[in-house]
Length: 558
Image 1 (cartoon, rainbow, N blue to C red):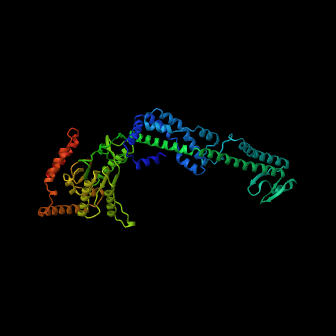
Image 2 (image 1 turned 30 degrees about the vertical axis):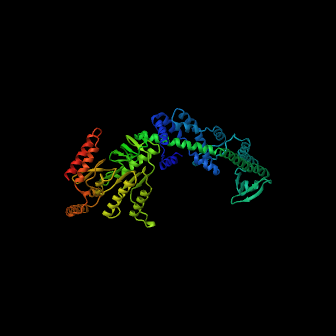
Image 3 (image 1 turned 90 degrees about the vertical axis):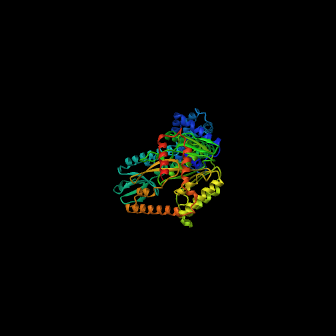
């Protein structure tokens, strides 16, 4: 139940600040009280999927194992309610009020229904307990005693006839019969009535055996019929309580989600986000909730985020492949979603402004069955975002325009950034390898350049995984290709061609009087000035300051 409810919370986050804070208060109370949290976890582990069981019960009959599962869940309620009495959280108190005890049902199931045994044991079991119904007990006693009577009759017939190999057996076609080996035919009494001849024996019936057979077979049928009637009565009683059971299950599912969120937050060092109405997303040392838990040789590097709806609403992110751009963007979106569903978030601190929608254009996929290429799917998704975004949306664009020619892709990416910035005040994370777009800082309101850096030593590349202000100087595409295992001959040829293309491009720009001032070297100095202005000297680490200084020196050298 909690699994399905948590999925609903993730897919349908809240947009109301008071409702979000209400959930956060509950998670906070469980986060702070380890004894309460662990007590609830232990009790909730006993609760089965009573919502699904009650739904099946309402539609028809359910198996005895489901009835006993309900009973186990009902017995866990007192412990859950007793634990929740200790909390003052409004939502937890409301859930406690919805946990209705059902002693009449627990007593009924305890007294009436047998707990099923393992299927591997192959033991004959009943559905209804012995002692619950006098009539059923009488039938069962007769069935059980008849087996004893059969054995007694068999012993008596052996003694009377002196036939030691005589035995009484049963099959579905003839019922009970007396089987006598053929060599004892002369010793068979006259009151034996021949029923069947088999290979090495004769089978007989007597009036006494017929009478006993009638009692045995009828007692067994009557007991089975009575047991089904009693089980149906139990289900009918449970069925009248289906609405209560369903409501109870939903309350437990909510509690399960809250306990799980608090447990994960405590285990992984999450913090409580502050939900605001100012529209900013300010995250200190944010982490990806999934990637940080995966086994890896590298330590996960947390990163900061500072966005608002005025002068820092668009982050244009550059840097090499594998440096962490896409993961960072997903990280910001996931932290935003987690905060809106009432969860703690993987960060040192987080101020999350209310967001109405999260749009993503991430990854590469096609839909060839309907005639749509990878690029067509990309453009369709971009068109949908541009049509449906609002001022309060969070938008992730990852490598727009990569599925077509360089200049076409650059033009599309450029136009998309301009359109979003002019039409909406939405918060946008835009990663790209089109370094020309970094010149847009200063000409498009609210756009700031950010980059993921990498260190190159002796032809090898080392990713720093840290985001910082400014634009990347190169993409390290060939170096990343080497990590992927491309043949050295291909890599050497690629480096040779890259050098030729760069030189040709520089010569072209030098001879092109129509070159836009957007690519003038003076813009590089403006970027350096903007980076220096954005530095918070009181809150920067020595390592980060050194990285910025090295980057600025590299820009000046170029």
